[in-house]
Amino acid sequence: MPLYPLFADLTDRTVLVVGGGMVAERKTAALLDAGARVSVGAPTLTDTLGEWAVQGRITHLPGRYQRNWQKGSWMVIAATGDRPLNMRIAAEATARRRLVNVVDDPALSTFQVPAVIDRSPLQVAISTAGVAPALARRLRERIEGLLDPAWGPLLRLAHRYRPRIRDRHPDLAQRRRFYDWLHDGPVRALLRAAQPALAEHTLQTALETQAHAASPGSVVLVGAGPGDPGLLTLRALRALNEADVILHDALVPAAVLELARRDAERIAVGKRSGGVHTPQDDIHGLLLKHARKGSRVVRLKGGDPFVFGRGGEELQFLQRHGIAFEVVPGITAAVACAAHAGVPLTHRDHAQSVRLVTAHCKDSLDRIDWPALARERQTLAFYMGVGRLDTVSEKLLTHGRDAATPFALVENGSMPQQRTLTGSLAELPELAQRHAISAPALLIVGEVASFASSLHWYGELLQPGTSAAGAQQYSGTLADAA
Ligand code: SAH
Figure (cartoon, rainbow, N blue to C red):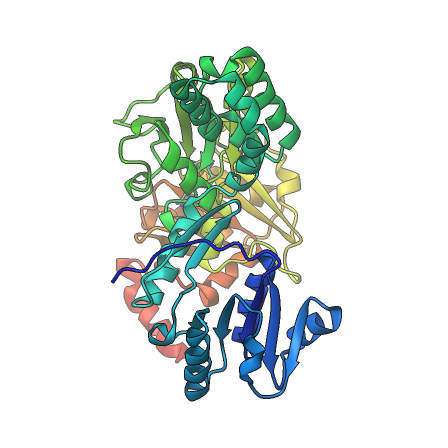
């Protein structure tokens, strides 16, 4: 028989929990959250349960279980870990027609406590009728990740305005349309952006002026991280799930795009899409066109949108055109590559600061303050530098950085084909060429780069002398070390 699902109002109703251990404590906490009066019967209590008893938050029934503990309770939870005792508690509860749950024992229980995703007043409860609690937990994690935390405050706000919404939109179809707007539009986005006053104001305005009918779209600027889908944030995943249109950079791999809503329109823009370069103005034009149609647009960029991603320019453009936007940060290449190459970007003994530098073109290289970069005890992370490694190395050396300064050059960071090349600054251009390092690659220069030799853990490590010609020499070195 399938179980009958229900949500119980336990406000000020007494519930008996038998047992005083960690499990009893967890159950008690959840019952208190629901406003129940909890009596906890057990010879001894955990420290927290003990404190709650002293504070009067629960009633402690000391000693061994007695039938009269059940008096006055609406339901009973047996969490004693003693099966014969649990059986007795369950039998005595059932005889009095009280619902009873024996923790982890569906056979003895007349009700079960589901796994819950809490966005109160919205709650999603999952039950496998006790058959597969591990699956219930997994589903809970999945849904937890997908459900915007802003649903809670949104539904509370909507509840307060319910009568006014009904007055304003007596027609059911119209009212539905209004709720669709409320659930998916700018009000929820503003709550997500921690702007409750503005959210409420937007709702009021929509009620007064029908502003929602225009239903302007919005843009979420999302950082996709360095390539491994596991490095997306939960917020990025949610945005991808709600997108109507996704404008993505060429750097964003298919594995990330696969996580997006199936029927979202995907448009590749940026440098390496089919070998053509989409001019920034065209990207702006596309953002505007789709947002004005009322679509929820995700602008998906590699790494973080505000680190060499032109995210700022795109937001300025959207702002000029009155399009609402949000930003979801991503893990930038320097952070991801360092982590995957075993290079701590700062270290108390070796580097007190990190600089993110672009080596994109000659122009940007000319404008760099090389004497400042050449100073020691700082870590440099060069983006877009594969074509200019000789200039970078030469400039740093002529401005006084030690020729023996270690570097780590990380190609395809965080992806299965990652390669990490290490060596000293003076030999950087030659080594990179010998190993044919190509974009995307990130160059880390600084004392900390030497940690790659010992802390490297992901992908392939290329150390000096590991090229085909030097393989012998390398195994020699390993043998020496052994
Ligand atoms: N907004 C991005 C950077 C865009 S510039 C971010 O925050 O990471 C593009 C440069 O980023 C590339 O030329 C390369 O230097 C670096 N990069 C991006 N992804 C990378 C990866 N997976 N591995 C190594 N470098 C990467």
